Image 1 (tube, rainbow, N blue to C red):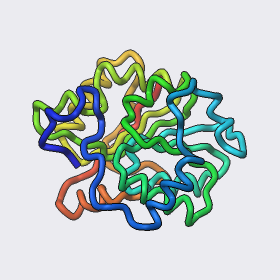
Image 2: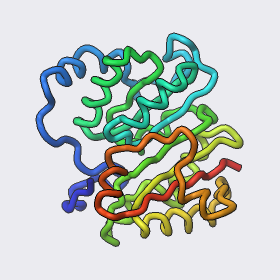
Image 3: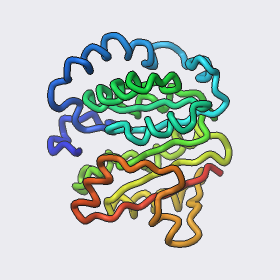
Length: 232
């Protein structure tokens, strides 16, 4: 997922590649016809987010970097009463998500196609009960670690979006990122790690849907970890 030409990426950028193979015909069609109906417009002040959905949900969730969309789609189908916002800067990821939304006729997902760092300050405070960050780009080279999404300066911005007691859920298969994230959570005034025993982070939480990135990690012999951080 990472981009070796990291010097070409803006300092605050979360995502690496912006596009891969050309979009399929249906994906291109949905970019033109469906995405405008679902996309967030950051050029305008953020509204009450519940008004973006036809059912005015009382519970809202955010998934940052939804990748193939497997988890986001499964959650939206399992919780039709909730509202979901998915953010991803990768063109092909958005194309796949749009196809799935159209196939399942889902009305409880809204989409931000762009860098999540731009989204954080636009969203209203206390809007979400849960934020999911699943298998983000690990930026494996030490000089790239400043581009990892979990940082001392990003955690307060994430915390601002969560209700008191809300959760930031983080999954990764990269040991250095696990340590990196836990070190920053430990010194954060906004979050506490909820784990009480090893199985609390070795096993996925209830309702977990395996993503293609996790399946690849397991095939290649890496062990996933699942962290829940609660907003103080």
